[in-house]
Image 1 (cartoon, one colour):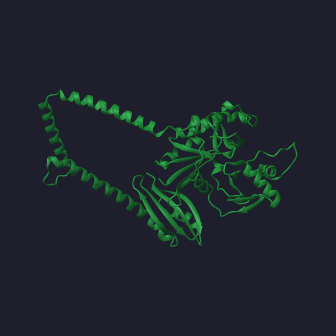
Image 2: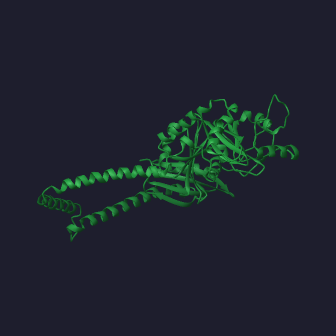
Image 3: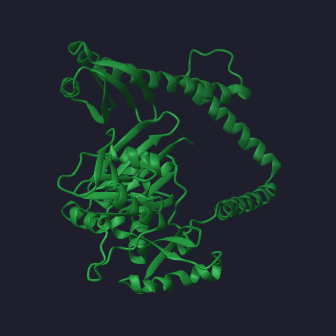
Length: 423
């Protein structure tokens, strides 16, 4: 499936939760929005619709660090890694979850998060019936740039990605201070520089010799902060992170948090099927002890009752055969369903047509109707953003409108609208 639901959780239940459905085949946003509380995650169950789910965790709650390892990363050595960085940690090792992001050239890159936090986030998803099989820090979903860092502002926080497996998040007010510590080479023992990876140390040397560290920003540049900041073509933050997450193989669901294997789930499914089959077999054996004559009589009575009901529903139909009643009834039901769906679509188009007439520049580019939810999705091209607001104000009061992402294309504005009946 080329579509993914990407959800960015907050540190606390009352923090804003961003979400986006991205189609990698069409390279477009299917739907996006925000939730105000973790209890509202259940609203995304319908949006998921069987799509794979990727969850982004706030980097402020995840420590990205590294440790030198002697030789190959064996199972025994992996179990010892937490104790090799124990002095860097403010929490007891037994209360932390460790994931190895990568191990090469004698360096293991780790992601560390409190187990209580992981349990809370996964409980939110489980309560909302959202089955997620990939979890990673939001900062590692930013684009990777050779010698440059990547940066993006989300609300009051800045995400800074320094390397493929390193980065940090901080409040906007702390950004100048933290960047000064990262980017300024100092020999002072009172203010040691935070530990950096080999690639980051190389970047620091380059920054010292060739100039300030280059930082690509995908949101408006901050003021009065160190570094050579360069503004990149703007994109929606969640779209940018969704594209990065889809290409990432990183996953914090390791160890005790590793998702249940598919064969285990299939075994549970077939176990239920086996129980149901056994129950059917018992019922079948019991039914054979009944009198064949009695069954035959009841069968004939039932056929007559079905025929009477059919004749009452379709009195004008001729040549009714007992053997074909079931097939004929299915055909009538299919015809009725198609007529109902067509009527719903035509009715909705009739309600929105007057609004289009009043805004000549408001042109539909594509139209998609989902009969299951009686939902009409339109991709629109207009002259201004105001046209979208005016169009919504002109619509029939019985229609519910949800506006999706909008963007400029030349001198035109394109966007998506989802329209459905309030009933």
